[in-house]
Length: 558
Image 1: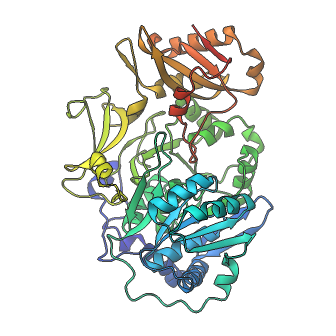
Image 2: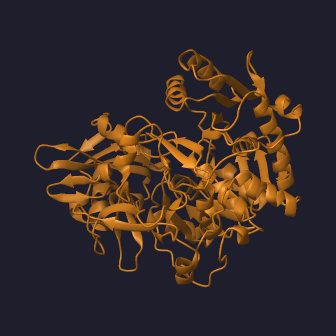
Image 3: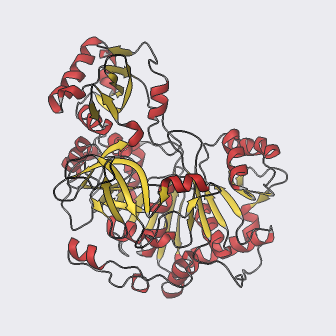
């Protein structure tokens, strides 16, 4: 399959990969027809999606199945008035209907808008009006249904509601009945151009209202690198990415790059994360490749991994937030496997990664993907020296990389602010070492300025995370009349440390930071909390922590 899209598929070294990776872009590309249906033609019985849930129900879908179900779904969608350019929100958790639906929308030239089931009525109203959403396909969960129905009076663009059950309210279409009775699918005469909008994400930003990140039909081609050369997948792989289908990470790890590579995608459909249950599924189904945010790894290493047979596991990756070196080292100690870190945004595909030919450096994101022309620039716009902090930028003056977003939909000013004059500014700060490895510092807005020093929150978080008392933490800057800002740590403690909260534990953690990083970076304020505030995609909301300071009687300052 990859031979259709790459001038060279197998590389002997990192240098070979960087010099010779090149995608062959078709005149018109549609992932559903050109990849999924093509697999169904050449290898109809090839496993595509292995789905299971908490009740133990198991379904193995082949590529032939995926073609047939997506055809039926596309025909059903046509019958209710969905066509080219229409915007359809998908609130489908990890249910297998998500894959049927997103492929069907691709086949119709419509626009898929994946969304999380955690959206409130207000969130739904905002999205429907901002994007002019025509239809919503949702799980039949009573809470989700109620939020949608309460949002409808304020969402005039919505014409069609579809439920996958079990609840199918009056006025809603029944998804399963609809695809079962659908006519034979007739491919539209004109489906899409490469420049057409195919995928829209509302970023769960740490500040402000979500932005609408618009991707075109070429976006999946940018994920060839994600699946084949970062996840290191092949046709024998059973790959698990932990992500709800409402997150951008789902198409990173559960769809595009994986099926380009011919891998079998493993989906564990659960409501609430439980490390033991997830490890049990990985053992039971013999998962070979695993990708999860750092938070998942942090909870997994707290389990007794000797109770689980993970001998099938060959490759591990992480993205979403920076990986703490202490977590990396402990995972390697327990499993013998490195965690290959990667970096990207909702606006991009994988932009920086640790690839198979590379030595892993704990805490480093890796090196730029050959698909992107990346640099670090300082405040003067100059390329940074090794060790100097700068903003990660992507140059687009020579060519537009596959996978880079088209625009922030309906917001030309915001698009120009982020991407103009041949430069896309990511807003993320990093350093680069002598070997060209990138090291995450933080969002530009999160860098702390204290007594003339610039302090990256991630370095302090790494230091705290290496103490056994700390399960999770977030570093923020809070105002100080003398220093401008001081460092605050918001900490989630391990269970056996919670009874020790007090000044002595605070001093212990502060001294630990002083010893493991520069002394001026230690947190002068430490607050203990039961959990960190996070976005709906799982990222820490530092803006919320800053807004609440001092937030409780569990904050200690000295």
